[in-house]
Length: 288
Image (cartoon, rainbow, N blue to C red):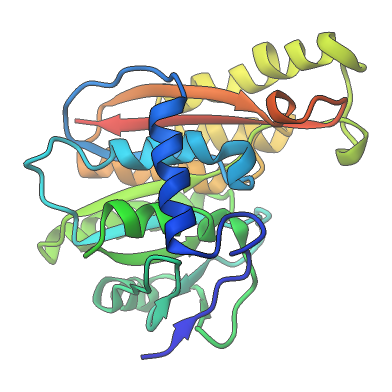
């Protein structure tokens, strides 16, 4: 089997399984986040900065997707991500595996192949792909918590066609009798001179504006499970760098039966590295 090599192991997250496991234990024990109900969580939204900045939030979301202890692992975990524009072509892997420090995650070939036959994709392979942190940084968590699950990684542009694709994916998996969890990977406002976006000046006032106004707008739309609103908000106010990925996860989760959103938490790179340029992060899950 051909295996896609990681692009960010050893820099954005640890390259060794023992080091990843130690960080996961620290993430789950050392960070206070919202208590979530013991129910079946079908999907979620995670951030994708380096683990040092947003790993605790992403880890808590993906750990929550395990659901009650008696719930078996899903057949498939889908991760929507990639930094794409509305006119971009969606991307997918349909064969092979993706290496993580905990071992390779096999690609779910049946459902991804069926989806690629019905929807226009750029097909990535283990040998030919665009390095992408948005999906890769979630994979050690997925392999750790869902050891036997297979993976469908999808680059999701912020377009209405993406929402059609997400619904088709959910329908295709259900018709094939496959259980599935869906994850949307996006960071929020990229603020400051480093990102060419500083409408509220600098200092604490700017941080409050980004957190309480700009990021809050898109978070509220995510919690309302409004995928069209999430995409429009991200495109117009620069508060979701992968709004298509977040919207796709919401659309797919709703198609799978999710009706309720649960807020996991919010953080910012400014919490770890104070300065006038920073990025916001949010985590949430969607349940029946």
